[in-house]
Length: 639
Image (cartoon, rainbow, N blue to C red):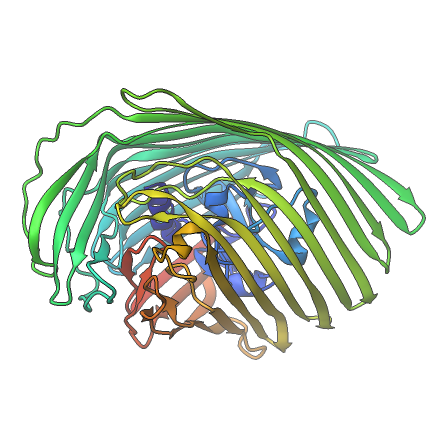
């Protein structure tokens, strides 16, 4: 359920890259993007990757989240009341971290208040009748202390007819007690009420579900979630000559008072299915985490050497389970059955805890106009304990030594070649809602990544990045008894390409493609239980974005987004596929004044062709895509 809540909230609570709380009327993901690998700003996300999909895996599930460059064990979606930015780091862009991670890094940046008084007001209508109001303000108290706060109300609607209400609140401060020292405490809360998540479909054989009407609720109205998320913490940066100390301590909580999973099992070609609701007595996942990193720079003529010492850790606790399956009936999916909410006797819940500490040392060397090299070594100590009802405590431990090494060579001022090798101990995926052992989190897994490529600055404003990669991990999915467990190993080999920059006066282009060959191995493949291609894998994912702001009419800009995928594997033998599709969206911005305040009206029509298609998950679930939809957002900045 955690990742479904993350996904649902993520549509409404996207982040935006900036160093301080800037004017929101200037938000534009396309013109702010460094490359095509993934950027979010102002409620818009572009690029081929996001925290839930990087090179075919999930950086969020793996635990590869960074906040202001520091490790955080994120348990629920951030609120953009305190988050200013999101940038996906892969390939050469990930080499800026002294301790990179397989599956890439999702880098969030805090929305730090600046030195000018500002109140940004944003209202949104759509999609699907949603209504949103957001307020973000900052107030400089002294020349060294600035305060920020925000409030947001989301009356949300999703593409399966479900609704939800979210209320976001936050407070953040930026304090510089002396030169070279910055302290940033923050607190944020997201209130979740009547969140109707999309229903999950599972077919009875190797065929796609029949086409359904979109934006039509087909589940039980009472099968909703209530609860809250809290994110709080403090970051500190101290610069003293050649020494830099960065530290952060964070608390991340997902706390659901009631929790439901809406399922349609054994979906048949005639449109009938077994409707099941899984009701649970809420769930809670809370983690205290953080990192302290000390860096020392040594100048040696044109060479710069940096030594990093790092200590990071987490203490996480989860409670889940104890739920009951409620059989609603066998019926045509689009003919809803009204089923009164039963009084459910819940069972005892399972609790698990994770304690992990990692100490690391890394070296970075940069030689001007020649290249750079880095090597890092981390020793991690991992322990997980599972306290199940009426069962002995299960304890798993691991203490690997993890190596990473990177190198880049500058062939010319505009051309660089890079390569890297990275080992990691990452979180494994959580069992999905339709598994018998739903929400169970297996122990951490050892992972490995190799990549190489180039970055070419074609012109001062146009940059191309191209690379190849191989990522290897244990593979978890549902077996024939609907038990989520390790079924083998998976290897993703592929290539990725990015073009970004201003290709003509006023015309910005972002284009990217990922080509991925996913291969399974192990006993489940040898026995025929699994094929050689994992479910939901596809060979190509592409995106292209154009943003045009004519020099003769700078108040207006128009944009076009095209996203496409190749066939997606939908059966273990690989013979059933979800057909390839391409989706186009068009939009525009109009910049004007409300009195003396700058304002921007943003309008977008997504999926203009109203194409229908299915998406699936590695455990076999299906969910249809979003139909054509209109969104209009008005933002103004009051000084």
